[in-house]
Length: 116
Length: 113
Image (tube, rainbow over all chains, first blue to last red):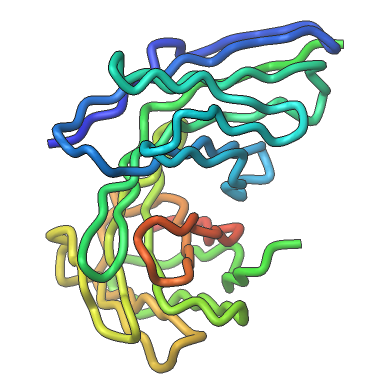
């Protein structure tokens, strides 16, 4: 069975600084997808970034980038130039593929606070 | 603004009531999902509909009854709920292929008295 582990329940960072959120996962599959979602207090789950396991290049979306280490089964998220609006719960997720879709398996989340 | 619309945003109901949650998307997505989320916890998958057919039921109690009337609509019918069912219920949709990201609505905050 696939599992996703986020070892940092809470983190804080000063505005404009860089922070890294860690995520590890366990799977025996070779082809899969990984995601980071953020959930601000407004409660909507927002996709931050996606990584395909078959791609060696790390995904980047503006200030957000990942460090994907397939052999180590590690998928950390780096937020550069942190902004107050980045304050949210961040969930790492593994996509288990089925014939007719996919099932997201989430980690327990990291609550990030960006301080002015 | 979210592209997945959920109504109502808040719902308070007694244990003997019958109510329904509604989810709508107009992105042409062919897979739709219901999740349950407790405070400070990750979402837990309940149901998956693919091309309007139920493809995954995560052993959810029968007091929760999903329905997909068409490719844009997903309902969750509620009956005889328990206080532990109080939670945020999130709907999501995706293009249908498993590798496509899921887009979430704002959720319905459900409280059972």
